[in-house]
Image 1 (spheres, helix red, strand yellow):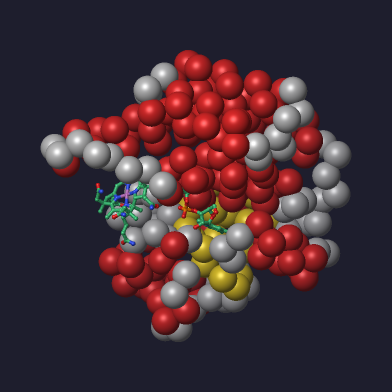
Image 2: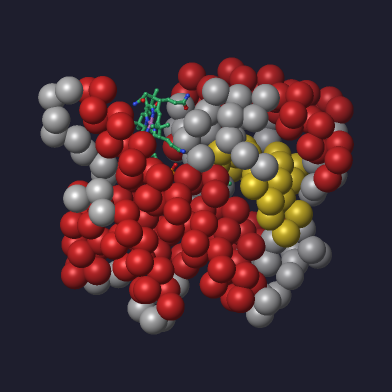
Length: 215
Ligand code: B12
């Protein structure tokens, strides 16, 4: 990712110019200047993670955060069109993963991005939504019976509900593997008490995991 690409994109975002930001990002993919991995991890993720609002009015900052998230989300969804073309040529590894964020966890961009990245690594991955109540997760597991459930968690105060969900999965779906990902699990202390099979937090982790579990 060159500095000029990054700066141009950030300038559209800072002006909340959604049309230009979306057209520019999708143009980068179409012209082969970036691949999906680099678009997501070197451009879109940093644009949110380093989001700063200098306005004194905090309420306005939250709206600005919403506008920026909506632009990024549109780009990710629009990038799916070229993603499916790439997936046709990806070696499938016959491992299915259902991705979600648990109840009360609204931060979903990492979960959506990583669902796309999983598809590029050959997984059969499905994002079932954010803020998903425990019973809905259990019902989806019953219906789709995936090999793994991936829970993306950002806020540490959602660790308690995550523990409740994973305990029930272990009890009722002992065959289903549990993957934890997201900022809440950067600190290993946060997953010590949570039932899981794998903690994944980067593309490198995902690639290594694909090699490990490929059928
Ligand atoms: C956008 C945003 C929001 C949006 C989310 C919209 C949406 N649809 O997702 C909205 C406005 C809803 C929001 C709300 C809140 N937010 Co907020 N939000 C952010 C912000 C600016 C960006 C988050 C983001 O999308 N990052 C980009 C993604 C791609 O990064 P990521 O999630 O870290 O994911 C990466 C990795 O973690 C990993 N990953 C993530 N999941 C998974 C899963 C798997 C399987 C794998 C392999 C990898 C993986 O891959 C990604 C790429 O590297 C951050 C700022 C920051 N520094 O992160 C604050 C931030 C996360 N929010 C914060 C807070 C406090 C809140 C609120 C409580 C209050 C508020 N400010 O409004 C509410 C809580 C809502 C709730 N109940 O969940 C805090 C969290 C503090 C903490 N650690 O607990 C942050 C850090 C802001 C801050 N500096 O205080 N937020």
